[in-house]
Length: 334
Ligand SMILES: [Zn+2]
Ligand SMILES: [Zn+2]
Image 1: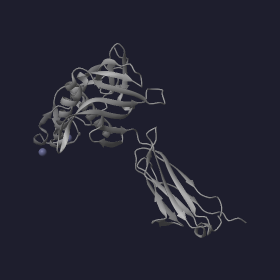
Image 2: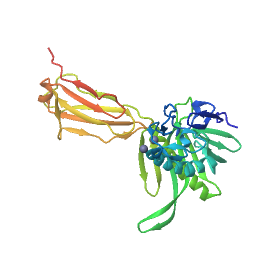
Image 3: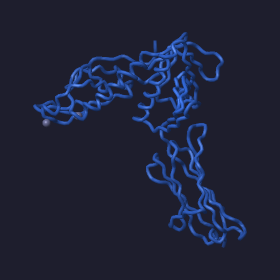
Image 4: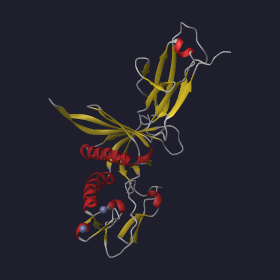
C-alpha cells in the first residue's frame, strides 16, 4: 500500500455527479476546475460555463478532466476539445495506470529489481512495486530519456522500439538528483507501449504546467529535459579604472542560473545600441543543475573606454518580469 492518498468520493454538483479525490491537494494534474454558473432557464456549457440555446449546447460528451461520472452538456467548441482529450484518457492514461513490468535500477547501483511500474490513479505519481515499494512524484522529474533499439532500418530512416527509460528526479527534502533506470523485462511489446505513453503523458503534463526544452537524438533515443522556469542573474565584469593606451578593454556580461535556455543579451553605449563585430555572444552552456549560463563580450579600444562613456548590458529572459541591466564606466582618477 502506498502512503499517498489516492481515494475518491462521489459529490453532486449543479452539473452532475462527480467522482473527486478525497484530498483536493492530490487531484490529477490534468484536472480542470468547474466554471462558475447559476442554473437557470438557459443551457450552460459544463466546460466553459457560457450560456447557449438548446441547439448550440446539445452535445453530451464525457469530461474526465472535471471528474464527471457521466457525459455532460457542452457547447460545440468545447465538445470538440473534450473529444480529443478522451483519446488521451482512453489510450495513454489507461496504459499507464494499468502498468508495465520493468527491471528497475536506482542510482548507479549494480543491483536491479523486477518491478511493476504504474501511474497512480490521480496521475501524480509513478508507483514502483516489487519486493519494495517506492514512488516518484511526476513534478519532481527533471529529465527523461527514452532508450530505444532499432527494429528495422529502411533507406529513409528506421523503426525504433522504446526499450527503457532513464529518469532524473529530486526526492523530497533532497538537493541532489536521483537516477532511475527502467528496462523492459519479459513482455517487450507492452513495456514499449507503456514507455511511449509515459513519454507522451509527461510531455502533456509539462506543456500545461512547466516550460519544456526538447532535444531529439535520432536513433540513440530521445532526450527530454524539463524543469520549472528560473530567471537569470546578471554579472557585469569590467576594469575598474582607465587603462593604458595599449590594452584592449573587454566588458563581459554573464547571465547565469536560467531555465529554459534562451536569453537575449545586448549592449548600449551612452544609451545607443551597440552591434557589430565588437560584440561577441557565446552559445549557452547547460550546467549540472539543468540551468544555463551564457556570456556576451564587448571589446573596446582603450580610448573609447577611457573617455568615460557609460556601457550598459541588457538581459532578458521569459522568466524575468522585467529586463535586467547593469552599467559601468571608467572612473576618472582625480
Ligand atoms: Zn463550452
Ligand atoms: Zn444557439
